[in-house]
Amino acid sequence: MSECRLFSAMALCAAALLPAPLQAGAPLSVTTAEVHYDETGITLELTGLITARDLVSAGFANPGQVLAVYPEAGASVAAGDLLAEQDPTQAREALRAAKAALVAADAALLREEREVSRDRELSRQGYVSQAQLDAAEEALTTARASARQAAARVDAAAKALEETRLTARVAAVVLSREAEAGQVVVAAQPVLELAGLEGRDAVFVAPADYNLTALPGTRIELTTIEPPNRSFTAEVHQVAPMIDSNTGGIRVTLRLPEEAAGQVMLNEPVEGHLPVGIGRAAGLPAGALVRGQGGPAVWVLGDDAFASLTPVRVAHYTSERVFLAEGLPEGARVVVRGAAQLFPGRALRVQDAQE
Image (cartoon, rainbow, N blue to C red; front, side):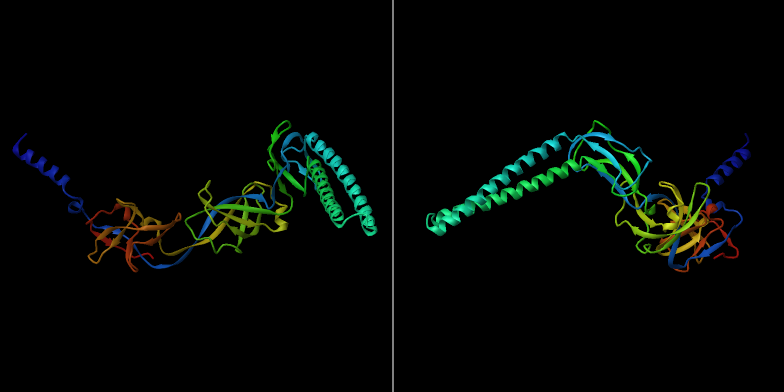
């Protein structure tokens, strides 16, 4: 290779190693947008589920063995229907013993009443001292208290026997069976999960990044996802005060009107658009956002007609817009079209600005 060719090759290699600003060719055509901060609201497009307004866990009041669980999941039950039975053997024995104790207590009370009646008459005749009469009166008081306690135990035992039969308090749909025949359950352990027939809610899980406190009372248009698609208006009833540990979001409950409750099924998915505020933010076209070394950034046009990469904090994204919470001064101009081709020091030709 001649010295001339070697020199040319070295020159080409050196040129390739030069910093990008020094080898930028024609100025890059870009458009810009101006930064304006304002109180900004957005719409969250969320998918939720239809739930029962009244969810009930049906269980026995006392521990014991389950004899039978009658309705299957999905079955409808009316108020008063028998749902499940518990082994009544112990409850029956407890009631029998309580009744026997009541008979004995009533007999003792009758005996003490007769004793006091006799002692009062003898006291008037001077045959019984006042101390003896006082003792008899005290024994009568004790017998009365014992009889009342025995009667209360009978009532409690009768109630316990009655509670071995689990009945529906309201008309409902069985969501699931939580216990089966032969299983030993503790007091109040769920045997059936029920959903009341009256009232339906739509439950959404919204991101925890937004202030949702103004949502209660807001009327939202909901649409079912499964065909045939149905639309109806629901009102935000409650926003959970704490983040759900399972989902990492905020539970938002919407109350459906009665006329809409009959058009939907439990656990049916619905779509809703929830308006929320994101505070003071600057909206820019999504194409302005690029990735810097530390995260999101934009190219800010300087007075010297060159752009500098500036980190920003993003409040919210949409498919077309990005909302910046901070990082840019009011009135700054940000490169939109052409931002992905920029590098420090590249010459620019700013075309008509887009706001």
